[in-house]
Amino acid sequence: MTTTTDSTSASILSQYAVSGTTGTSSTSSSSSSSTTGTATMGKDTFLQLLVTQMKNQNPLDPQDNSEFVAQLAQFSSVEGINNLNDTVSGLATNYTSTQALQASALVGHSVLAQTSSTTVDTSAGLTGQFDLASASTDATVKVYDASGNLVKNIDLGSQAAGTVSFNWDGTNNEGTVLSSGTYKFVASATVDGSEVAQTTYLPSTVTSVTVGSTSGDMTLKLSDGSSVALSNVKTIGS
Image (cartoon, rainbow, N blue to C red; front, side, top):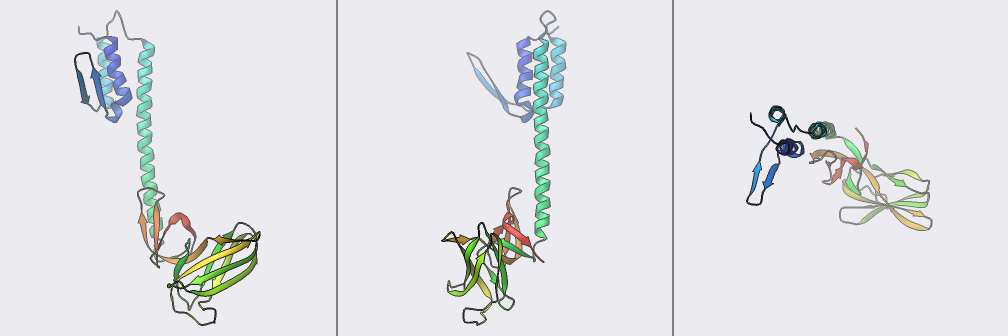
């Protein structure tokens, strides 16, 4: 009858429990030589080795039960982690696909997104927003054309903390209706005697959606040519 030592059997099982399920390479070395090999071991192979070990162990010096149970527990843990990783990876892929499908429905729709410039139809005007962290004694919005010229000052006066809406009717400071195009909006508010720049949210039409490599990496292309992350969209309109 062929026998194997406990150390050899334990080595085979330990090799699988640590790296067999991931297909990593195993290396054994001695004083005279060093050999490196790569092997992928599945559950069926592991069970075959387990049965073979039990059949061929030295009956006068059998493997310690506690060590044997520990090897089985380690194998089960590694296998469970691998299965969990596969499940989570599948869920992440499905989530990304669902989010991409939902985002694609935004194409052609208007969104209120965090940006400083947008395309404006001056015959219809524009309504934007900014968020005040503290009450302001004086809030203003300055409108610049594509050439960087200041065309309109919008005085909003004192404002309480919270969301502040502003409207631009498409005219300059002289009351002349300007041509449609891309305009920049710079909002500021006086808080405790200091002028503080504000982040503006402006309406724009979504022209396309770009899906990144991760679930949170979704970018909307807007009608003025700029891009904005889906997470920076505040309101979705019609």
